[in-house]
Amino acid sequence: MTARTSTSADIRVGVYDLGSLTADQRDQLHARTCAAGCGSRDPARDGGHAYVRSGAEGARLGYVVKICDTCPSLGGRS
Ligand SMILES: [Zn+2]
Image (cartoon, rainbow, N blue to C red):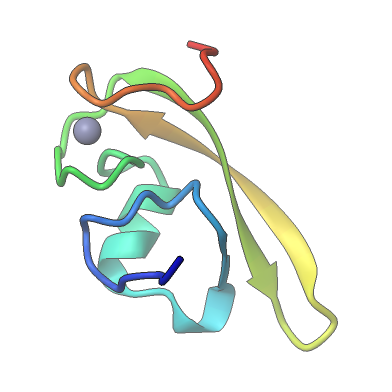
């Protein structure tokens, strides 16, 4: 599996490095755009959590993310 640095990547899949997030990925993390990566600027549903790795110690940070109406939830929770 290869992580793609575009809005088409689901931010909830994999653990990204906090220092190398793109602006698009930060928007997804902060629930400004759909976490599933469709580019929707109006995500209304609970999308669960996304995780990023912070600093050299590798601590994981969890973010509450949102998804739009048309993207599927992960894990069946909504
Ligand atoms: Zn979406």
